[in-house]
Length: 216
Image (cartoon, rainbow, N blue to C red; front, side, top):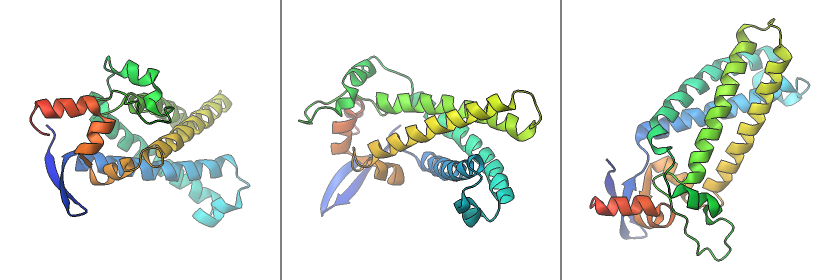
């Protein structure tokens, strides 16, 4: 059940809801840090001539060892994080309207308010896309790590690189949408708290649910 707190903003008290628990934020942080490390070391492994890789990590052997270590951290933290968010990632009937309106991002008047629950349809699509990408990365990555001489290794490497590129691109779009496109959204993942005005604007269906429960 959602927890309501009071936020002090410019001398004014505002009601806010704990949108993300401490565990969810911790898993997200570990997941994000391990993703960045894997992206950097993965690029270094793909482009071995990159001098910056040796400068950052010391040697090619160190890059490989770090990549393998953080692969486990990434997969475990991702699995726990996705299991935690799974109940909120199921699509609802109103999500079709959000998708048809593209979340209202193309409306320059900013008058279009796309319906959304605790998690909007765009975040759900991101969830499932990245989950599929991580599964491909994990399967191909562990095959490459533990059976390097297996036939079809070139195919595994190609699939691994393709999945990595797509996931990195998706994360960059996600980062843009949670910072520049929607100011304050990234901070919610840091504090875990979303104020009443934000929820009313970005999560109208969830806002109505919270009102019906007497939480807002």
